[in-house]
Image 1 (cartoon, rainbow, N blue to C red):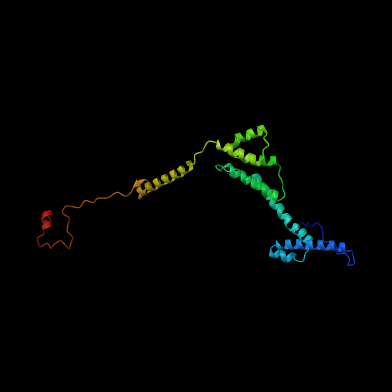
Image 2: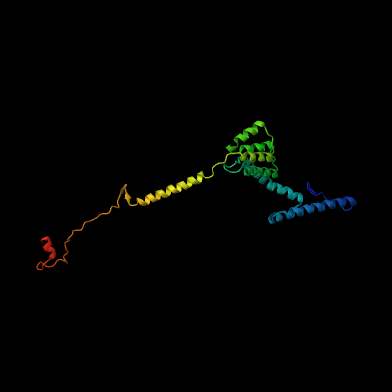
Length: 232
């Protein structure tokens, strides 16, 4: 595999020895092959920008363009890694795998963390359920790898007392029931004002012999059955 570490040497004179010309031609072909590989892996925009550049120029310009971006990405990733904590109720296996993923990403960016620091950060992010495990680990100064620590945490988690999974759900259901009761009470008490019911039924007693209207009352000359009874 050919590695470009310097610009392409100047071409030798035409009358140079055959072995000198052959050596330069081999280097020239290798540089062209590297240039084709770099251009072939670029986006169309970058390809147009670098199509007339030598492979050595391409490498230096690309480093200048993306090195700062890689530093920013690495800094953000380190912050995320240090702030990562195990979520309450989540299995420890998911948390350790997440932390291991951050370590792998940092290594790809060229940032290698000491093994004891990685293990310390993983332990620091565990929930209070693992407090006893952490005390024992630190007391015995166990120098474990991430994989060994992972297995130990899984085994320890199996011995933890099981937590009830439904209290919160029952509380929510209870809340709904209470709300429903309030609604029913409100519906029953509809029409109340100032704490007093206003839906009383008013009964009006009708006279046994109501007085007839003017239209129903006959003339004074005529005999009125009603007048006779009430003494008109």
